Length: 368
Image 1 (cartoon, rainbow, N blue to C red):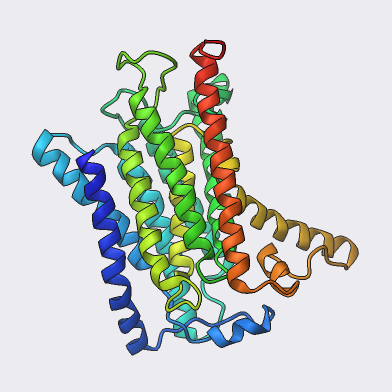
Image 2: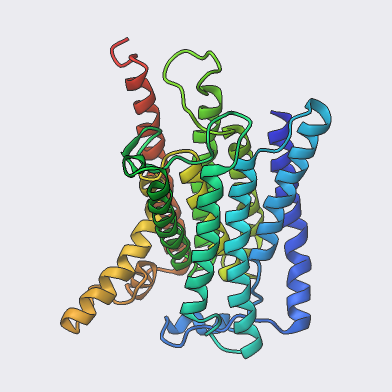
């Protein structure tokens, strides 16, 4: 519990102290955000707002978890797990791609950064490395960091092992590449209004912190009653999720409307990569669709808009992603953001109820 508190406090302090320092640095370098010309006209006033705020979010999570890991090692001799390292690698590597993209935008002084091909190639390399290492690296718990299959909660309903180990790894690599691309893009699409992505991500990571803590208290082989989870080092994952939630909270202090700084692709891709990694390592890839329901809605609104326009030449929404649609309907930016936070909170609550209900049912306590 002390390790968890240390991680929370350090992550919050780093963002609360580090973000205004970054704002000053970005102002001096004149690295301001360039606003898309086809977006809502009301957003043009945001041109020049400091960006690259995701750098502080990533550092806050890394330093928060690092301080927690140092405490656990010095006081209890607990060595950091590979599962935690891999989750942080997913966050940092996707954040690196976002940083390259953001940096290219501010240097070129336009809203076009890293090419689609370059970003896609980078995601493939990092996601593939994550997938392979998650299957082969030994862990303290004896359970692999990931399982070669697709899971709703814990047990795979589709196992790739039917095809033999080599092909199972290949299929898993393809699956992880899809998840990483889907979640990084979904979270990135939600980063269009002041505080929307940071606030929604905070709620989502609190949900995953609760799931990982519950799994850590019901770990297979630990002698707990009821259903147990064959998950690798979920307490480490819970600490990381808490650090991410607190990093988003601290950043939100400066990112709420009107924003003093934007997280940029550095932040949104990093958060999306971490969300994907947590879903894989807690064996809840399909439950994540509910936990991150708001991000799914944002992504699907964009897919529907583009697909329908190409097919008919007409639009379903006034503008996509869907948060811009409600802006053009007359909602204020703050109203859209707060209501979308509420929607994400409801998704997380539903996801947690399903997660707990699954545990009760598998534990045979449904009629107790």
